[in-house]
Length: 312
Image: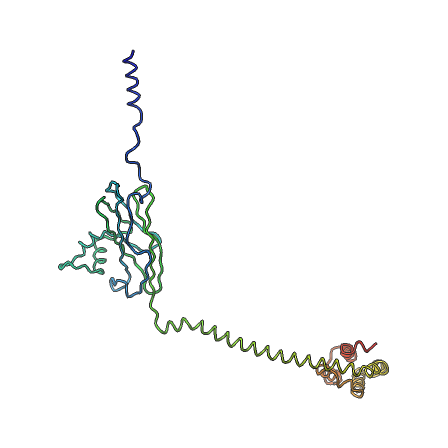
């Protein structure tokens, strides 16, 4: 019986799951390697670019993958880019060996041409990293020097099924402007400033004229008000004794208006009217000037506007 129990217990232990996994799966690439090198921000001019096949279109840069301490490698890593335009990766040792000349010199332009011809440039590079050997990775970025170019993105490195490690990269190629282009670029600003200055001068002059006209009008209105008070008795006598008879006579409209105008002149009331009112009275008294409606009613409105308080 005791032997049976021992057999059952041993069988249960044999079927139980093993202890913790000594090599748990990697969830972050940054737990394996450190990315270093490269230039996170760079500003170039077209003459600093490489000439490939007669065109200045490439920039070569590099970075390295270094294993973290106590990490067991080799591991296969995938390298690609995001937001950087046309980027192609390569391994530096392989590239140097492929592009060496007879005297062991390596020309950058020749390097790219050779890598391209041998198919060693790839937008998605797969490399193996050893624990004790940093991996130097180069990349070629194609840019257009014909105009100002500014790109920013990131290089991504990852092992399968793990979160990638990112290396931010920003590159700006500034086209050198000629003196003419600089002057042309400044022309709109200069033109706006000139137009603003001239416009301000015109507006200022217009406002000055308006201000002078308004001051003159105010002076005339004050003079008219003073004269109206001074001649209030004569004005009141005109409206009380003469105006109604002249306005309601049996004569034609034009004759009534001319008689009222003559009386205004003889009583010196015409002389104190404002210039605009004098012109209106003269127009109504001129038979050659067309008038809409009754001339007498129009003249009454002019007199009422200026002497309403003395007409009653």
